[in-house]
Length: 108
Image (tube, rainbow, N blue to C red; front, side, top):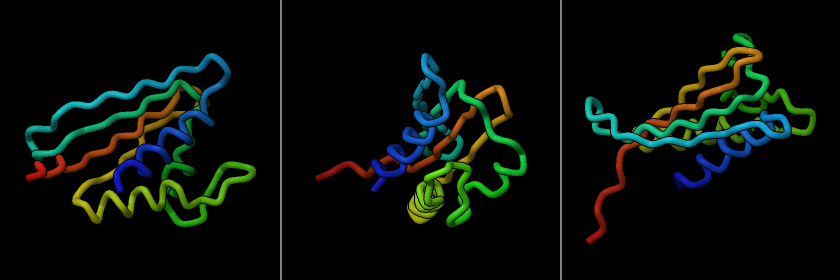
């Protein structure tokens, strides 16, 4: 169920960057919480403070043809699995979406 979360975040990043824009994905352990921290950064147009406060609410979107369910669903999936989604952004400076999640249990 974690793949749709990453797909949703990456799809938003792809839509936010201009032609020639850049998206980077990084992962590192968060030892203090026993989780993994995944970050998706883009150099797109950024998000205003008012928009950031509403992101993740069902049916809120800034896209002309968006439905406003992608990040809402992603946040809900992560929270049910003990993770979280955080968005840091400024207009004109891009966006960083941080995803914290518990590592998968080893399969037997």
